[in-house]
Length: 79
Image 1 (cartoon, rainbow, N blue to C red):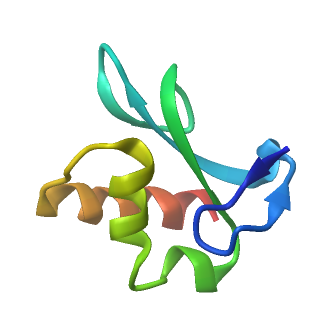
Image 2: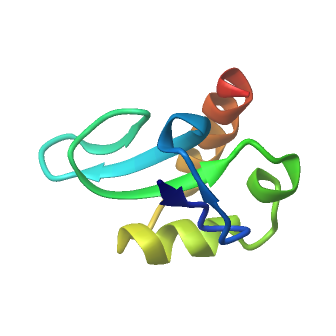
């Protein structure tokens, strides 16, 4: 069971989108070992205007503008 960083509800981790800050490979989607954050499939959660700030805080890293373009593409493919 994991918690969505946006709505703070608990879900089974198979039903969540995983973003990981892997210690070797950097930011990865749906795989990797390291600090992770989970986002549920709710449109409200992944389109939340504060999701960028919440992801940066949860993964303890700063992102460039390209990351969020890739993030939106990956989450659209996942959902």
